Length: 503
Image 1 (spheres, rainbow, N blue to C red):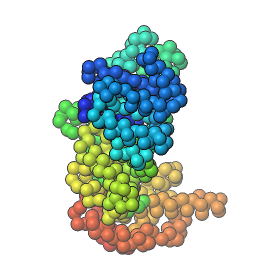
Image 2: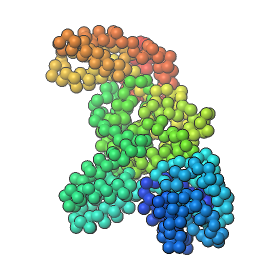
Image 3: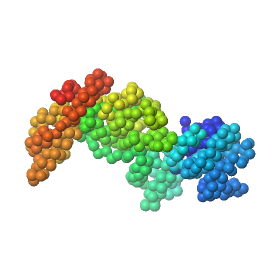
Image 4: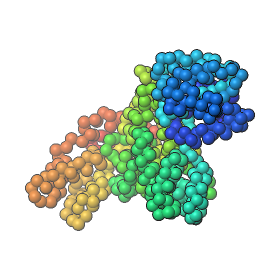
């Protein structure tokens, strides 16, 4: 449902208080004006703290610097007078007891009158005593067609021409930005060299990274890791390589749907996060990292709004990879106890989107403790596949050592006995193998020489792997995977016992 359709429904249903969180005042007011015109040219009144009411000469300036008077203006109008009353930045006054009381009184009164109050605010701040009276309506970022109109307006004004492919590339780069930001970054390009050029895509991407950082919900994560940086996990890598072209137009013509995502479950330090980064790099898609903890806010409706904002932004930036690290910790408390059901509502919004999304957002979620994940998360249809990433086999440990040593000592790789290293490190995870190499380098550096195989073995002998310190938890994970509830990421070997390894 579009914003205009939903807003019109709220007007016709006589929702008295509508809260629209957006930074795009000009664009949302234009959209409201179009809906008002469709409803028989309903009058629109706009108020802000500095100038009061604007537009109508008889009322101009009324309520200036007086938010309570702005509400009294609405209250004093005749019951048969219709209107949409846009109050800018009014969230700053909702904590005032007189304003809150007046709004609650108006909420009851306006249910029987053709009047609606619209709050425009860059953030959601709704006190608990107004939560039942206010409905939140999200205003989406500009669509590809809206972005195209804006770019063509600017290119026509400068007299330059972009090819169809160049225009499509620029539109795709601009997705996820507000119209104001698009105008600003393109104006910067015009100021730099007098026109919009194809290489201005880089300027747009820089602006996009800045925008994502300012949301404080998603991070634009630079991914340099490659599939070849993953040691072992052959089943998982084969699965990913087969889907490398699934976001192309050729795949759509073939009838393939967009891949939905992966849930990677397993022991800490076995390469789950590395896989998420490698997917982004190999598929040439931007990587967005979601810290689920940032979704939760202290104000009524704030957490749900942040969740919807995250979804809106991810879809606007699609095709992309959305990486959710340690999702088990984020949704461990979805029973709603102690947080008025906020966790349950956020989880419900997120899980519904996972199931119903049609946009090319490939979700990669990682989890260490499967027991903490709600059962709904594991249901078929949420993800394309659930992979179990266990402790590496000897062959995989050899591959992991080879990957790291090739990066560290490519010129004298042959001096290291990689077979022996793999044999002597049973039950070591990939992260623990990397740490043994770092420790061995410290040994060699402190003695003013290069590190050797013996240094690596010495550092390994002093390390107690997670397979020993968290044996019960790891055994539970391996038993769960053995029961057929997940696909094994590794091709070779069986899961075996924890302390003895999988060789």
